[in-house]
Amino acid sequence: MRLAVLLTVLAVAAPTGPSASAASPAVAAGDFSLTVAPAAVTAVAGHPARATVDTATTSGAPQPVTLRVTNPPAGVFATVTPATVTSGASATVTVQTSVSARAGTFTLVVEGVGGALRRQAPLRLVVRTPTTVRAAFYYPWFPEAWHQGGLDPYTNYLPSRGRYTVDETVVRDQVADMRYGGITVGVASWFGRGTTTDRHWPALFRGARDSGFAWAPYYEPEGRGRPTPDQIAADLHYLRSTYGGDRSALAVLPGRGMVVFVYNAHDLTTADGCETIGRWIRARSLLQQLWGESIYLSLKVFSGYRGCAGSVTVDAWHQYAPAHAESDFSTAPGGAYTVSPGFWKAGLPYGRSPFLARNLDRWRAGVARMTASGAFWQLVTTWNEWGEGTAIESSVGCRGAAPAGALCAWSDRSDFLAALHAQPPTVTSG
Image (tube, rainbow, N blue to C red; front, side):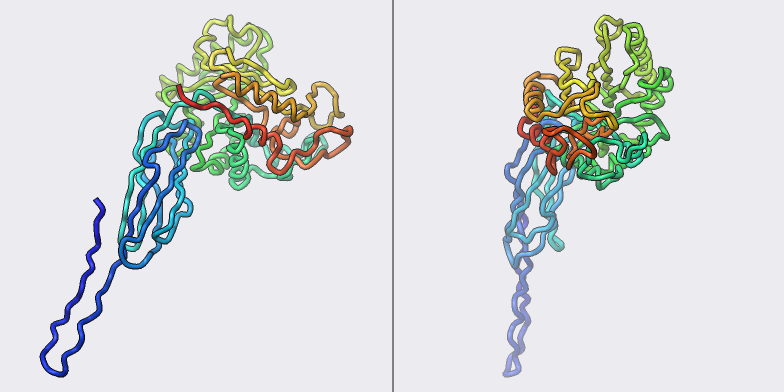
């Protein structure tokens, strides 16, 4: 119930006679009210919801009111813009949810503080499970990777951000761009503890703080050898213990575990691939036994993967083949559909195989097919693999010779992102 502040009149007892003084004037203290509309909002995990907070002056003069949201559950982040208003004005409450947010109904508290007064109003939040997650492969290699093979920058393009360093400010802008394209998860390359990627990972998490964007590892050691189950389990525990937590940007699917994509690119035969499945199943079991942690496992497809013992226990399968415009594995367990903007490896002449020319019309058609596929994982290869020329991050031109009509520049925020924005993923829950 709203509390009213009483107007207090200080009466001064006046003596009789001509020296009697007038009574002191009334002193009024200001008060304000706070309401939220709508009183209930719904968000699919990974996507935002918004409401309006209205304030009103109920007595006295208008006063500054500082607004905030309290009591968000894990995987939910809320901000108020502007954070301070004069009573009588309104502000916008933006609730960002991560794919890590569990489904359910929660009560957030919108709070306003003005002077010594504190007013609160509830905001009911309903979080639903997504049927689709749009993700992009991301490479935290920079600035180290700009200079390779005698090329600087090591790319056939000229990134709009220049030879940037993966730091908090850059990542924050990149995250905002990806979210504009409906991308809610970044699958970030990770080569192991102490590597360049590992040193850049903290910047990824600072740059995604409170945004609702989430990061999942692309486990690269599997592409360079055959790590033992013990090593895999220890690596995954390191990632979970270092980057996890209720307010973290680590992608953890509720009830399923930390999302882990694996670059098992050396699995060229069915025998190799089946052996990889076995090692990862053992690693998953070790992780649970030793630390009580679970993972949601996505392996890269290989020839004959469906025939391997244990393949049905793998949560999801994906393809990483960016020299192909599209890879449709929407009917595989976990369901994945991948689109690529093009492939032109640094230092190679335009058109030299492997190669995929950039074509915006083809890209738009591919995004439409991906969106319609119903695949749970809708993947983009890549956000910023500049060395292979697969980035959808913005470019201002080609750094060397390219034939007339070659697509070298794709606007400040990227025409590729605009196509993703125009065709958002279907995320309604089942």
